[in-house]
Amino acid sequence: MSSKAIATVQKMLESLPEEAQERVVEHLREYILDLQDELEWDALFERTQEQLIAAARHAKEEIAAGKAEPMDFERL
Image (cartoon, rainbow, N blue to C red; front, side):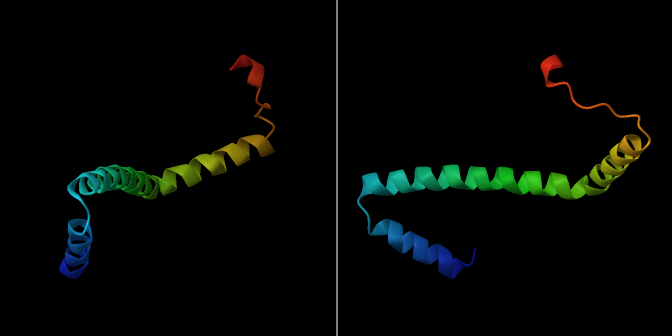
């Protein structure tokens, strides 16, 4: 984030009563943690993209060769 954006957020926070500032900061913490989790998942999927494609191809080949069985959800 640019220093200009940070300064804007800081000014917005400073215009609020202290109790409201604390609530906003807590919401921002939660939002940032969620965003970091999403970014980690995105990076993980990007790193494993080739393995996921290979697994999908393998599954399609097994289905085409008649080696696959329908999922029995009762056995789960």
